[in-house]
Image (cartoon, rainbow, N blue to C red):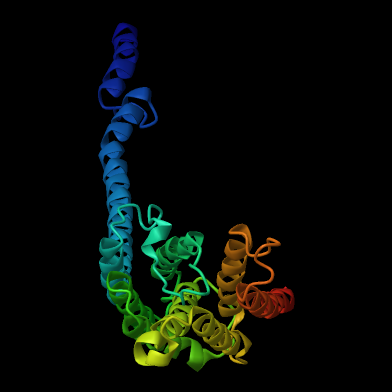
Length: 310
């Protein structure tokens, strides 16, 4: 009996262990951590891909919008671009005006007054370069075009008239250019020079000078009695130039151009010997003195305009 009890006691632990609940491996074991990582990695890659795709799509939309707006802004300036291209073709320029020869500007003057200095023609590259800069600046402005439709239309008309006058530098063509470019300056009065209007102001000034001197140069053809009277036509031209330089509506640019042209004429006369002792007793001296007088007034007005702007 004792032997049977001992056997039962020995078998009980083994029997109970067979029915005990099985202990599974912890979920926090390295094996399961590795499996969790392998499962979540595709999801993070998917999120990253979606994020990158959305950002790229947003950037593409902004780029398309920017390019479209800039393209349309350049189209708004088409009148200036087309007429400026015509002007450059007329001047045989391939470097946006930087290679324009000063001799391209041909302004006739009365025979007794002398010729207009060639270096005045350097105003033409300034006309072209400032227009190119104005169009670029306006097209690339942050919110809207800096050049108004009035600015664009007036500049385009001025370019067309200037190209015609340079191609056929008759007094009539210069007069048309003066009227076409002068409309803007007359409407805006003494507007300060800036990138948007500098080219049209220079064109208006040059065309006005060419018209006044051209009319004086044509007088002998219109009035037979003046034929051979070079000094008289020179004085008539200077009188007209004085009226042009003294006009109240002149802005700073026009005053500077007026002073530069007549000052250049005076320098040319002096350089050619107008003040030599042998010439002082000739009638040419009267024209020289009159030229100096008009030049002094023009330079004084230009100096005052520049000082007031500062």
